[in-house]
Image (tube, rainbow, N blue to C red):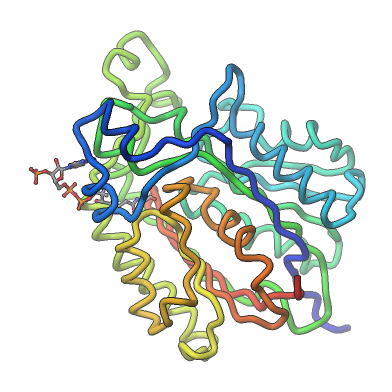
Length: 331
Ligand code: UT7
């Protein structure tokens, strides 16, 4: 029997309409466009406004678009995996809500929580369901409404993040394309540098936790930066070595959009030319699980069948990883 590979056969994305520029943020915290641009590469980000709208709202838009453009009937989907750090609720899983909104009546669904590396973890997990031969259509979503856990009085965090997300459809193929390899890592000892302190079982929500602002993102930026810059570059290099890819073999680097300086360091370690790197951090900021599918969505028209693509991410946990994809179609 020929080996079954899992191929991405369609990509979709969604960002909310409301734009918050660096100058808008400078009106509410002590910051300025020059600092944010030079330290992060971000110029503006999207924010989801509207009562009662959470991550599932954006993901539902993306999944409906994915079904439509791929000509997939909702009932044909076997599985939906949602990577998110800002689920609609602690439970049920946001994946369940998205599936219900999109009429995926025959799919089972669940969430994966791995902060900014969640989309890579989910893509790898989803591809393995396809590779068994038992599952034919798997949707992988990466989405976050980071504005729901940001303290807009903390200039060190509120300037970085934005809202948005995207989705990919995975289908089986016996051609030599698809998800080829992944290197995924985690190290929970990094917890204290990037986390949301309360709202979980260790420290449930109380008047005190709200008063102490423990439901917002806490980040020791400098420390996270050091780990990110080394680990994301290392893992991207490792996957190239392991698959005997030279810099010339790589058509595209799809890096997590946390900081332009981290992206540059990763690119340099890989030896890849600047024009092969997908960067949209200036428009969307760090959408956590949304960054990688949003890049694929935006660059889809430029991708060609057989392109060697390396995705790389680093995030809270710590979690990090890289995935090697041979692109499966010409747009
Ligand atoms: O996606 C998940 C993983 N997360 C990341 O990869 C993020 C990694 N970290 C970073 O990207 C960077 O550390 C930040 C962008 C968060 C911060 O940049 P930095 O160059 O590490 O700045 P810093 O935290 O060392 O702060 C430098 C100075 C400080 O002032 P002093 O102590 O030198 O007087 C800060 O108080 O900049 C100050 N500062 C700001 N100034 C203007 C911090 N935030 C701001 C701000 N505007 N928004």
